[in-house]
Amino acid sequence: MSNFRLSNVFTIAVNVVTAIVFFVALAGCHDDNCSRSSANMIFHERGGFSVYPQVTDVVSVNLSYGLEDSILFNSSTLDVPMEFPMLNPTFSGDLYEGLRCMSIGDSATIEVVADSFFIITAGLSGLPPFVTSGEAFFYHIKLLDFQSRSAFDSLMLERNKNRHVEEKKVIYEYLENFVPNYEAFPSGLIKILTNAGSGSRPDTGDMCQVFFEVRILSGDTLYSNFETNAFDIEFGKDFDNEGFMEALGSMQEGEISRFIVPSIIGVGENGYDGVAGFTTLDYTLNFVKIRPLDVVKEERKKRAEAKRKKKSRK
Image (cartoon, rainbow, N blue to C red; front, side):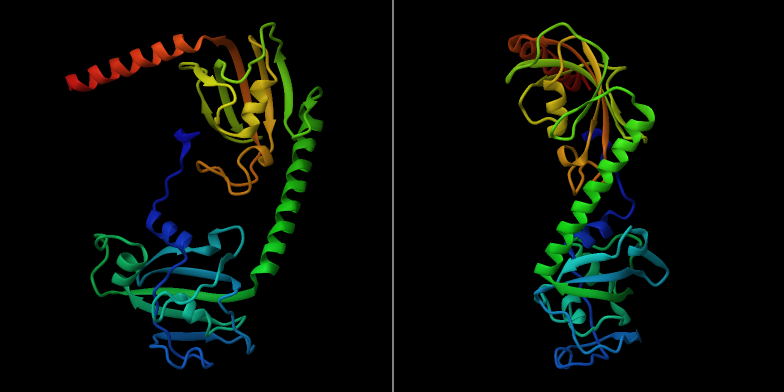
């Protein structure tokens, strides 16, 4: 589904969130970890605890950051608080050093020079045009919780288990309400036959000519080639996801079917191509026929040559 990669106006900010490396200066610290830190930090709230996260922990925070007159990122737009592992400070005064000064319930504003954020943290070769060298850059952070990595890993396993259970429940509620006849596979794949085929089933290495449309279950269409050209897909080779290939393998030439693909054999827990993790996909597949490999290769060669000639004429 490479045609559906979602763009984000704040690409720089999102990349930085993924990296979880922020450069900060800290003050007002309240334990020995902070006494040697150069500081520019104002605490707004104190949780009253005396235990602080260490390098073996995972923290949960509310976080926003940006320039004085604009916010580039705000974690309140996320479904859950931000969570990331603590690391040893990469540079003196970075976020990890600051978090080791905070206890649960503490909130603070941290001021840094914008150059540090965009050039060192975001890894840009220069400042964006909307940023003036030397201007202030602010982080607003509240430490909600922290726990050991082993405890966090156990929590994530339980969360993912619950999300799979909830996804399965939604799928079967959908089937009960809208689909009277279907076939359920052990993997979780659901097949809804539309038009039966009479030809062969694909085998490993077969070139399968296919039209398909993929949607989010009860949601938007992500991709369709029904109005364009069919794809020649090599059966058994990675394409889209595990559920798609299992679906194609269940079909005969000339068949049209719908397939509901749960995330466990689809987009997975992390998602891909702009589709969130634990998303259920809904495919319609038209398996036209199996074609000889040499014919497909020759067609691809001719298309590539035509494209090359067209480009050379420009």
